[in-house]
Each structure stands twice: as C-alpha cells, then as structure tokens.
Length: 424
Image 1 (cartoon, rainbow, N blue to C red):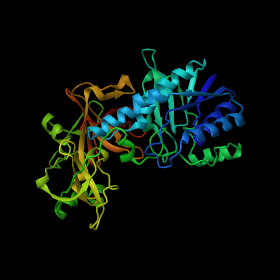
Image 2 (image 1 turned 90 degrees about the vertical axis):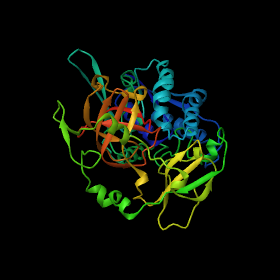
Image 3 (image 1 turned 120 degrees about the vertical axis):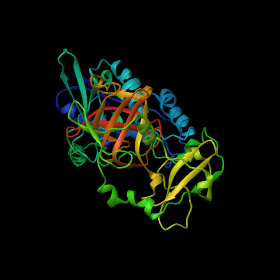
Image 4 (image 1 turned 180 degrees about the horizontal axis):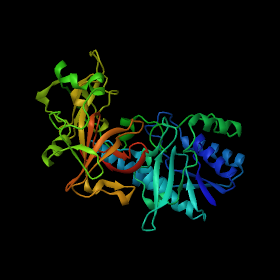
C-alpha cells in the first residue's frame, strides 16, 4: 500500500513511519505547517521550523520522500478563530479535537490523497479496526490505545466513518517506552525529542496573552463563594469514592432496566434539565476578593493565574459570568461549586462515530464517559431526549464546562462510540 505519514518531527509519528516502512509499504512523509505567529508562545520562537528540520532528518534516515504543505490559513479559520469565538462566550474549547477533525483528517488528508496514497497514518496512541455488518456495510471502529497512560482516542472523538476509512494508527498497540526504544535503536533524530505541549501546532502559550490578539482586556471582580463543611462533605475524596451509582436527585437508587439489561435512574425531563444546569451565582452570594483582566481569559476549574493569596487551600474558578465580567471562585478541591452530576449536548452537536449505534429519542444507555484528555473513564447514563442528549454521571464530576467535548465509550472493550460539545 502507498501510505502518507503525517510526520510532525516528534518521536511518535517518526516511529509510525518507521514501522510502516519496515512492513514493506510505499511510505511518503508529509509535514504540515499550521502556524506562523509567535504571539503568546512561551518559547518565543517558531517551533515549526525546528520540527520541520527534525522531520526532514527522520525521513532521510528512514529513506522515504519528504513533502511540505502550508495549511496555516485554513488552520486559523477552522481552529484558532473558533477558539477565540468560544473563549469570548466564556466557553472552554478543545482546539486539538478540532484540529484532528478539520485539519489532519480533512484539509491535510485531501493534500495527502493528491499524492495518490491509499491511507494517511498518524502517531496517535489509539487503534482502529473494521467489520462488515449484516447489511454488507463496512463499519470502522476507534479503540483506546494499549498504553493507557497515553491513550489519545479522545482527540479523535469527532472523526467520521469516511475519515476513518482512510486513517491508520501504527503505534496504537505499543507503549511510549517501546516507541522511544524503537526510535533510539533505529537512530532516529527524534528519539529523545520531548513531547509537544500546549495548543496543537501553536505550542505552549500564555493563554491570556495569546487570546489578547483578538479579545480585549477588561477589569472585573473576583467573587469568592463560601461553603460550609457540611456542604463540602459530599465532595471529599472519601465521599466521592464511596458514592452511590445510579441514583435520583435525592440520592435514592430508583432504577429501570432497558432492553439491553442495563440499569439507569428514572429521571423526568425536568430533572434531567436541572442536573445539566451549570453552577450559577450572583455577586451578593459571596465577597469580592480581587480583580481580574477579563472573564473570557479563564476557564472553570482553573486555579492558576488569579494571583490571589490568603487562603489555606488553592482557590478554583467555579463559575464565569461573561455579561457582568465576573469570576466566581471557591476554596479547596471539595468546594461544591466545582462539581456537577450532569451535562447536556444540543441536538446539533451530537456526533456518532458509530452511526449505526445512534440513540433514538427516549432511549437510555450506559456508557463510560470522559470530558477531557487523560481523565479516567467515568460511569454514566446517556438519555436521548427531544431537545438533545443528557449525560448523567454515577458520581459528580469536577470542572464540567460548556465548550468541552464529552466522549463516550463502551465498557470493557473501550470502543469510542460518539461525542459532542457540552452546551451547558
């Protein structure tokens, strides 16, 4: 087969190319440049220049052709402008998920196909397989990578069946130490290169400085919301660990069973809507303890960047009011304002990787869910209602924020079934 590898200059994509070449495939390297500006980047340099140099050296070492493509214009339109728009609304976007959907497996994929390749391979730590259903249709699946510390399936949660049909993930069945060993053994220049951090293709950034390219600073109040020990008790580590599984709003385990034999709590539409409501406060609910430079520069669950002292424990952002330009904070990991039991995904934002498994209105299913990369999978029930998809977790979750992607997986097998943008 003829395969294009998205060679980034990192060790993961380098080893992906190495393994495909060793397997006898006709491999070509394709490096994409997606960003020029250094505004807000902590290193102050164009990292892509070093990455391209390393990628070229890797391609030369492996013995494969090297190609270059500049996708910076479409990256700004599809990913960075989306980021600015979401932060301006007080939401928390995930640019890496958008980059995979709009760039790596769309714009980049089209460029690769122009090289007459059969597939595009990346260095993601995840797996793909396929089967033919009873209708004779080929169905593609995304599975968690074998290295659970590096599993990157979450970043691919918005891919479609068509995109998956052209995708390969050669390192999904090996772990990071083995990837490093293979690279070192082969003498690849990327063998000791550190993993990239920060925004996909932009790098590690000072987020407020980066966002100030388009969003203006505006001073506002930081209001602390206080909680009693009794209010905190349900959210201590011990309480969360010992918490109930499926339960109603009062904590009573009132469950029904669906056609699959899965148990779930019997919530009314009103109860689901209540569970999905974000934590909201008013200035009179707390005390002004400081100032900030713009509510749009912060995210729920954040604890750095406020520069407010005088607390025994760290303070965390628990709510953001863009209209009044107010940030609400609470002290300690067990502050109730940090936790929520449910969330809602609007109809327009529901995405099924497995379209054949899409839920019908009125259907309930048990899945494992995560709302951020590296978060351990959480037990939850999905409720498909007329106005959208509700996810209710067995145990309260910390830092749920509108704009994040929630992705759901099958228990045990850890196949990713679908995802959606959290609406509230």
